[in-house]
Length: 500
Image (cartoon, rainbow, N blue to C red; front, side, top):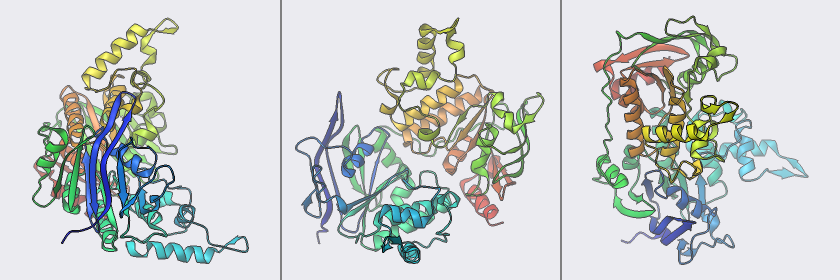
């Protein structure tokens, strides 16, 4: 029996000046199917999604059909058959679920006034199928990442009967810890069970293989394979994405740093989700910070960097006198933040400007910037971290996510720090870029750099760390190191500490 197509893309091409982003792409999503779309950063996934969303107009000759009807970019015909949940969820975190869902669909009114009771009932109705315990009146800033994602999915599906269109989910689990990622995957399965077809974009190959019926691989703007996921392994899928073998089980294998000099000490650190955290970091060590949402794990790195107002506690480098965490920004503790687009990348500037903005004082000759010194520094660091770009003057927004992340790394390393702070360092990057970042961090650690990695992705912690602190309820409740640091042990420790 032939399963009918809901989304049928044929010969989709999109060119920009000097670049072919999509080259005759064919993609079919069948009725009731979860179809994964994977590829390295820069492979064309984002361009394809933007074409489907109507942000980009495809080149002449491209064809997109939804349930047999041509999708018109000029009139918007058929557009309602496609709904999107982007990686940036598009929610207003200061507002409640009630307000966010109303903003995305409509406010229920009568005689010019909002019918709040009916609006609340409508919100509960939209969220009823998703099995999340959410205070619909509280600001979404207080919700967990998976609760916010569920609100975004509910908003996308509001007023739409599934089965005749496609829900596009773009990296929905990118920064979710294992337990919440598994919960969201079950929610995605439940959405499919309602008859909705799903185009699922993710860099997490294990969940792609567990969730999707078929997968399409993009490389260099072209489709290199469309295959059933049954019998397909992560190594094969990663190799299709990269065009070469990628070690999806990479381990840095750094030795214990127990006898090395202390690089950083933090004592009795307190913040919104931290209740007296203390730690020591040694030279050449990569120390991991793990924990479920609300445990305080995600707050450790920004607090140590001096980026959280109202925090308390002391922090010191080596044998130097400790200072209050509010003065941590004076200690040269560069941070690679979890959201590079919001907190690190300067989108209107070039690669060179993004890289050197942290060291402009060193590049001056007298009162003016020395362009010779700037060019020399940029060339050195682009080579050291292996940034791939058309030139150092190219806009950073033209780079893939992995290469943007490398530029942020280079900006931090150019400051010659003794300690580097990383928060979700591989969020939203493909397997090849992920391995390159791991190798970069491990190389620097072997040279003596001390690194703290806080990540919702246990793969980051297992790949890089020789020791991991597991937080729960604002405290360090478990430490795993050496042979005790395994995937099973780490996930179990996070879940156990999260239940305290």
